[in-house]
Length: 221
Image (cartoon, rainbow, N blue to C red):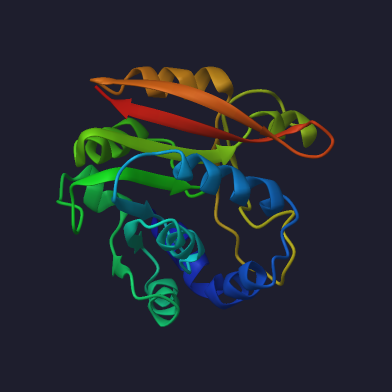
């Protein structure tokens, strides 16, 4: 994860914690339920929440009976997560995974990246190396913004860097980091490069029946 991204999260961690704890992001009404319901359908006992932030999803998984490890590159978010849960939390970066380092407490039955994939390069390596640390029948879940987001914001429908990750969110955020938005075709191209897997994609809709996110389920085979 770039220094720009880590710096932005370090500066905005306190505001992010407040926004999450206050349930201030309307779309989370749909996306939170979608990822939790998807996890509830899976078999297994050990999970890793990669990019866990302040740990809300890790806590939800604990309620479902999962023994979960939460990982994040932002130390102050990990400290906040530890205050609110007895689960295991550690500072660990995407670069650590891309470089082939062992994920703490691996192997896992499920690994989750929930709205935390901002990178253009290295995505295939990140997901492939995570799959490699799953159990025999393990599953990797990704939730990300639906590519329809580009059209909703009057942007050209092409994969592109966007300048401010905090734009459109409630809260007093500053120094937003850039992030890479992908078209559906781009996502499919990336996913097809992950060896020894198959995948399915579910589109999450809001009350207006408009797509707001994708949940990608990658199965180790």
